[in-house]
Image 1 (cartoon, chains in turn cyan, orange):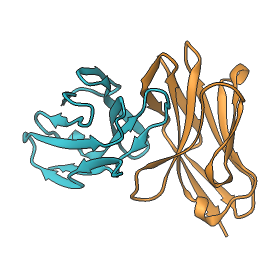
Image 2 (tube, helix red, strand yellow; image 1 turned 90 degrees about the horizontal axis):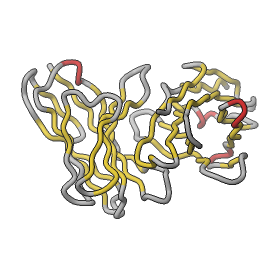
Image 3 (cartoon, helix red, strand yellow; image 1 turned 90 degrees about the vertical axis):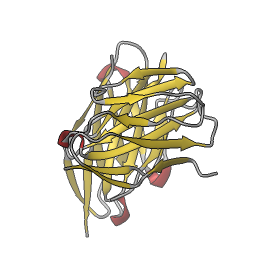
Length: 112
Length: 114
């Protein structure tokens, strides 16, 4: 099993550009989430999903969009990148009855 | 809504000493509680979790944590620190009726001195 796969691992964007961070899991997990990690601030929840077609906002949703058309995929879209979105982004998934998330290896994004 | 506070952004212990990392939570309904560990330049790994039942939970690498409802705490302990325990540790909480929403604390960096 690949677990949770995030692509790309590294990305540099110019201010104003848009892009999509990809996340896929092969464990048939119902729950999927996106977090950003910044020094001294822990992991902050951006958006999460409890199943295909269902998404909700987390703690810091502004500037990001998500959709969940399949159980496996949960892409994160940056609409117009800003330097404040420079961060490490983690995708995670969990089964409904387990409540323990499995994390991907992260995407390091720099916005210049 | 739920929240987590980790007391101490940096903790330093000597090898062989007790490790104690503090976590307090806030929630309006029974919480599910987790500890994760992150080694440098890696993702997060689940150490242990409390959902229901026994309040003292044991995890990997000799760590354990006790859920104390009266103190709204879930502190992480290990009797004897090893150099390989040096990492960042995160406490997290979700609610039993919102299992998809996991909220993290700010993290505690553990250093282990030889």
